[in-house]
Image (cartoon, rainbow over all chains, first blue to last red; front, side, top):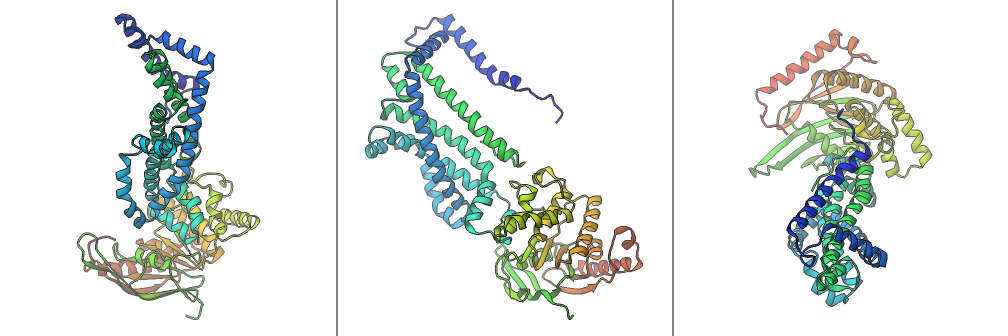
Amino acid sequence: MTARRSTPTRAVAWFLAPFAALLVVWAAVVAATGVPLRIFPQVTDVVAALVSMTASGELFVHVAASLRRVLIGSVLAIVTALPFGVALGASPRLSAFFAPLLRFSVALAGIAWIPIATLWLGYGDGAVIFIVWNAMFFALTYNTLLGVRRIPLPLLRAARSMGTGRVRMFWEILLPGALPSVVTGLRVGLGYGWRGLVAAEIIATSAGLGYALFLAQKTFSTDVIIASMVIIGVLWLVMDRLLLAPLERRTVQRWGMTAARP
Amino acid sequence: MDAVRALQIENLHKTYVDAYSGDEVVAIGDVSFDVAEGEFVSVLGPSGCGKTTVLNIVAGFVEQTSGSVTVAGKPVSGPGPDRGVVFQNHALFPWKTVQGNVTFGLRMRGVAKAEREATAAEYLRLVGLTGFEQRYPHELSGGMQQRLGVARVLANEPAVMLMDEPFASIDAQTRRRLQEDLTRIFQEQRPTVFFVTHDVDEAVFLSDRVVVLSGRPSSVHEIVTVDLPRPRDWRTTGELPQFRALRNRITDLLAGDESHAVADPA
């Protein structure tokens, strides 16, 4: 491609442009209609809320609590879903057996488990982490399974004909071969995980961004509600840009394999 | 033949059930032939005659219905490092570098690092890929990818190198170069080669013997000995009257079969 190459600054500007546009429209609409703060906040109200939440240290507590839960939940999902997904992808018999269950569970993944999770694990970290894990698990398993199935047969045959054992087959062939799809699964799964997190925090805890949302609603503090929503969105984008995008660049793109886009 | 038999195929027969019609299809009728150690044998036949199926059975990827395959005196069951396969679309591991691909088989067999590196360097030199060790397969040209596929197999020093139409999807000029490279590598290393192709010129140019299969259900039509002098290159070998005579003879053998060949490709 000989098209003009975008400099990092230009790329950042293009990334931020739609958000800037949204802010302008938001400020204009609120100014024109004069809706009261208890219905919807002005941009400046949200900025003020962010500043005061930062100053009081409250923001840090919520972000730390939420990030910790997402991190633990995702790590658990990765270590459970990847081996399971690879096993299903590699064994038609196993996947035939589990396919109906997987399909059934997709509709229930995440939020629907909150009542059971709180019954089992009480109100607190345990239940929220369980929900994050549960929300991610099925998306990650299913995409890993698809990724393994998409590995061209000659590659598997080549590995087998060179005497590759089971364990090495997993680490050296099936997992890297499935990675384009695994990255997709991580992206979709983390999205579900964040949504599950917010819902679970609303119900099951006394800290975290979901809880902050819930608390602000009781006092009609729309500025804090929107501020918390902004933080949730920003954290998700940062995770995607800082973790998933570099992972994709260093593996799938470096290897010339095209990532399956969700 | 008094040479050691590296590969022995006896009364190979393969039927399978067609997934759509449910009919039983005979892919291989009755195929027998030997490949001696250090010999280059091509299997040639009309498309759909089951020649790739013969290769897949020898490789251990597919199981025969009856008959036997013996490599270096041992009957074949399942894939193994004594038979290295060069695939039509190279089947290199995209997530491994050139070095990672060449040393893969050695690592799987637990060969020590120093020895792996020495072997890799030797075979990369042989196929002209020295200096490309840290590249990934997608950064190489089609011809280089296929030469890497050959190096990956030879580095394991298999009893037989199986090649499944390795140059079929490569442009005509590059293909001739690769054929010359392969015949040079064969001269230097003397591996035992079982080469599947549908290209008569290619089979004659590369081989010591050409096994001509009949159309489906396949059987060995004739085994033609190619006694052209080595080293071979297209400019001289291709102009030899013996080369043309062999090519015409094999073309006639195949043409005689066309009339009763089945129209469905494998």
